[in-house]
Each structure stands twice: as C-alpha cells, then as structure tokens.
Image (cartoon, rainbow, N blue to C red; front, side, top):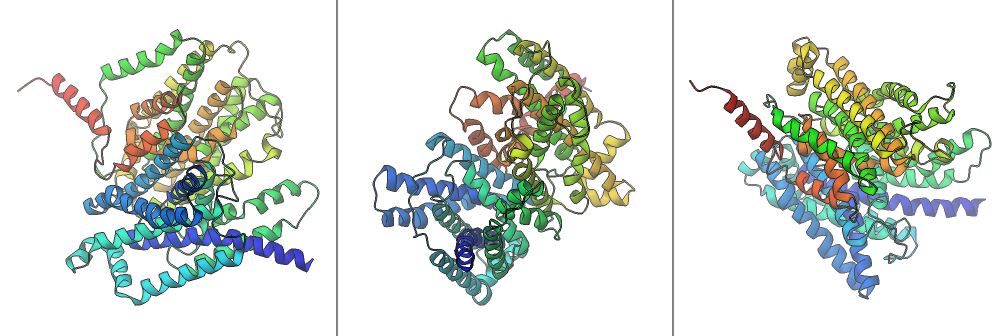
Length: 604
C-alpha cells in the first residue's frame, strides 16, 4: 500500500508540476501587463505542435527542436502578441475588459489556425522532452519560481513591473520603459506556456481543442494565488495534483461512484469553481461597453436583406439545407449574449453550458428519462427544457451581483467548464441518449420554417428589452453601474434578470440545434465553443440584433464543407484587432444607420 501511495504521489507531482508552470506564466504575464492570458493553453498547444513538426515530421534532433521551440518560437509568439495586440490596448487606455476580448480572440485564432494547419484529429506521437520523472519537472518548476521571485522582489526590473501595472502612464513619466516591461512579461509567459505544452503533449491528447482547454482548467492555481503569490500557486498546483492522483484509489459502490470518479478526474475544475465563485474576485475592473455609446439603428432595408438571406435556404436541398438548419438555432443561442452582454453589459463565457443543458433536457424529457416528469412531445419538451434551464442562470447571475470584468469572466468560464466536465462528459447523464425531431417536421425544410418562427419570436422578445422602464434601467446599468445604483435602479435584480433570460434563450437555441443535428453532441457545447461564440458576438455587435444573425451565418457557413477552423481563425483575427479598432465592424453599421437617418431628415 505504501508503494502505491508513493507511485500515485509521484504521478500527482508530475501533473501538479505542469499546472504550476501554467500558474507561474499566468502570474508573471498578469503582473507585468495586467492581462490574464486566457490564450495560455492555446500557446502551449501551438508549441507542442511545432516541436512535433520539427522532430517527428522533419526529423530534427530533439534537443535542437526543443531549443528552437522554447527559446525562439514560444517567446516570439509572446512578443508578437505584445506588439500587435495588447500594446495598442494599453497605450490607448481601452477599457480593460477589451483586453479580455482580445485574449479570447488570440485563443480562438490559435485554435482555428492549428486546426487548419494540422487538422482536428488527435496526435499520439508527440516527442517526450523530459524523462517520465516528476522530480525533473518539479526541479524545473522550483528553479523558475525562485528565479521569478528574486527578479520581481529584489531587482529594479521588479519595481518597474509593479509601477507599470499600477499606472502605465505615470510609470512612463517616471522614465520607465513600459513597453520593455510588458514585452519581457509576454515573452516569459509564452515561454512557460510552451514548456507546459511540450511537457504535457506526450501524456494527453494533442489536438487543437483538448490541450488548450486542459490548460484553461488549471487557471485555478493562479486565481487561488490572487494572481500575485508564486509560492501559493506552486503549492496549490502540487497539492491538487497529488490529491487527484490519490483519489483514484477510492472505489465506492452505489450512486456515489460515478460522481466520485468525475471529481477525481477533474479536481482542477473543482478548484476553478471554488476559486472563481467563492474566493474574492480578481481584477474586477471594466465592462464590455463604453458609457453613452450611441445605439446602432439598423435601417429597414438592411433587415429586409437579412430576411431574404435567411429565407434563401428554403430553396436549397440535400447537404446545403441540412447545414443551413444550424444557423437559426445558433442565432437564438447568440441572442442570449445580446441580452447578457449587449443589454446588461455583463461578461458571460458560459452560455455554451446553458445551450447544452437545453439540448440535454430536451432529449431527456422527450425520452421520458427526466426525473419526476413524464415523456413529452418534442416541441413541448423543448419549451419545458428552456423553462427548467432558466433558473440555472443564477449560477452565473448570482456571482455577477458582486463581480465585474475579469472576476465575472472567470466565474462564468468556471461554470461552463464545470457543466461540460461533470454533466456533458459523464455517461450517467448522456449514455444512450438520442434526440429526434417532432412528428411532421422530420424534413429539413419543415424544421427550418419552425426555426425561423422561433428566431423571429426571440428577436421580438430581445428587442422589447430596449424599450420601456426595463430597457432604460438596463441601459443605465450597462453604461454606468454605480450611477444607476445611486439613481435607484435595482441593479442586482436586473443582473439576475439578464442572466436568467439569457439562460432560457441559450437553452431554447441549444435544443433546436440538437434537434437539427438529430443527436445530443457534447462537443457542440464545449467551453471552447462558448469562447468562440462570445468573441463572435462582441466583435460583430453585441449592442444590436443583426450581429448575432451575422455571427451565426458566419460560424456555420465558413466551416461548412471546408476544413475546420476557418471561422475560428477569422473571428479570432477580428477580436485581436479590437485594440486598434475598438468599434470593429459595428462602425460600418453605425455609419450606415447614421447615413440612412440623415437621408430621412429634411434639410433646414
């Protein structure tokens, strides 16, 4: 037994060491730039692919390939991100939450680019950089932690780092080269990401989606450390790694067995949920909308063109129509982000979880497997599922009462990852589950008509949130929350309303999407999809109803019949330009709207 304990401890230390590397990189980047690099996992994945390409495909010696990957490619990615993406945001003093959107853009761009270059299939032949010895990895982590601690606490550069994060403009006036500080922070953070990727790749699934999400989960160690303390981050990572390994020794029987197995395999996700939902928030500055931003008034002719384009698929046949069926359902899901983000000004990275729960509950209700409820017809099951999911919007709505910006983003991301890992990925919830269409709507054309009707109703409902007392209150909440609260606006109730309504819409769209695909596919609702959907709606316009329609058509259309990753790469590219062009494509809509309004106004 003692031998088993020792072996499991060593295995846990190996996992914890990789998580500690991620925590060190995140903390260094955050302390040098003020940005939580959600793309850390994507950078790790790209570096793992680069090392494999050099060594396996091109036959380079492993030491040479590792040196090029870790000393040139990984820091080079960091320097490019600093110079092209995040420095314009810092220099322009753009809302801090827009740096989060840019970080998500980098994530989806790298994921989409990797899928285009290397395909979406898993690779099992990644080269092994270090021997399967946790002590070697632990030594590397300890040396890095000591080096970073010494540099940040007892050197002039460390003082410059703290000054730049506190106030970049004031630090520059004091003679500090803020650009150099941020460049070093990004280069080192990307180096640790690359090291994490090449160490993990031989032992986990190397594909464009699995490794980035795995690294996202271990953000928990940096959040527990409050994005400041390296010893706390390293200790937390090692403790969770060892505990996760030791839990594999438990084999309970009965109803608790699948739950314990899920927990033991996802202890970092549990830590992320606790850190994001229970511990005090980190970096709570910023919203996603700017105060007093003029509303985008979309001319009627634009809506007419949009309606014609959405009616065109009724003339399609075969695979073209089957692909088009996904667009209205996805548009309903994305409308939920208009409610939460565009109307309420709140960050939500977990809408994919509510969409997936809508599809799952619809399937369970239609199959008669939902506890306490009889078997329901498919359309009624869809409506009941949306009603059941709506209250679950409190999972993200309740933290939003006291969290903003980065803290809220982490809370909603944690909920999305948790639902994916503990519900969608577990056989006890999804085994043997299928999802069919209602009787009489088996053809794609008939089902598409129903989807259009649901989408039209959702558009009218969301449009109503702009009008009346509720619309004015939501606008005040979005533009300036403290001022709205001082004016007597019930801020907590409005936030809960936005998240609950958004959850219901996402569930409705998720159920439609499942029916359209005729299956419950957990991969269609994973957290990576949630990040992609959020970035698409923000860059194409969360403050208008046309943005989600364009985003849905773009996401489905670009990847239809093409190699996966095109849509993610394009959305990511637009998102990372948000620092240089804060209005993005919405500027075009605003100009069109103003021009049309001017044409209707008679001259004086």
